[in-house]
Image 1 (tube, rainbow, N blue to C red):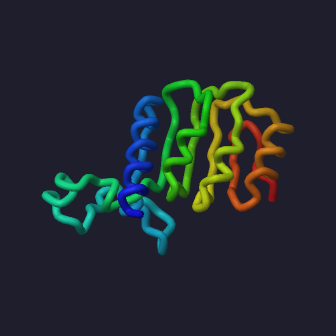
Image 2: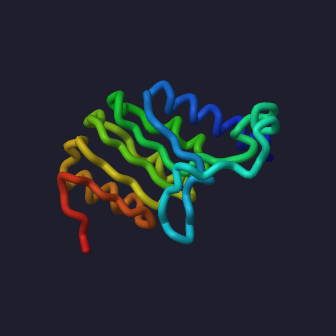
Image 3: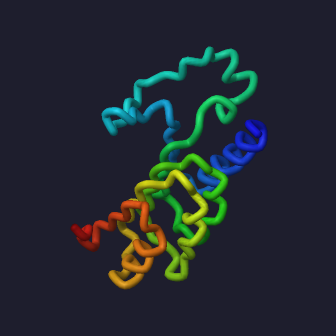
Length: 142
């Protein structure tokens, strides 16, 4: 089981890299304060991380896609522990958001520079009822 998870996560991280995106690992997010500590370090020794790989030890918490137009979100489902996704760049007008339903821990989706329509945003919020979906070009409903 950990092998399958780590292989999938590595594949997901590689996809993010092809998109020239950025990831943050879970050990950098403090759940009690709901803040990131970018200076946080893993408790595992460096030699172990270098030997078996980061994907066995930590999970990807956050992805930021901000360099390449997003055309397909299917590969992101390899990041099973993803909690937060930010898309800060143009998206394909026909971008299918349904793969995000397969991310059980996703709690926040942030959209900026996407030019998503209000109608499409409403459908996205209905598709992901347990996810806070924020878009800078539309106010978040109260």
